[in-house]
Amino acid sequence: MKNIFSKRLKSARIRAALSQDQLVEKIGGAVTKNAISKYEKGEMMADSTILLKLAKALDVKPDYFFDLLPLKLKTWSSAKKASCW
Image (cartoon, rainbow, N blue to C red):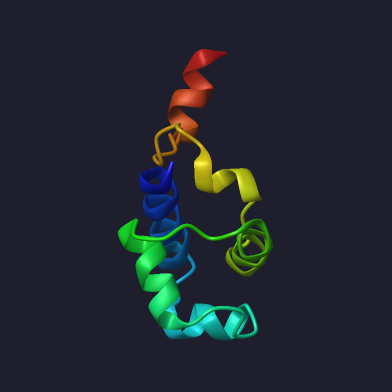
């Protein structure tokens, strides 16, 4: 579970274009940069209060951090959509 959380947290942070320091600021200093680093390395797990703050700061649902589905999203071109009809 920690491994999934660590990958998802880092992915969401990078997607939000935030450094670890900026993420700490967005969650009001609820944890340190060192804690964020440990979360992303899978060395530590955030408690539920921190998970909710991270989700809000990164604009994801809390269950995003534990979702087993691949991170890639398919994009359909308008040409493909048109040919389906």
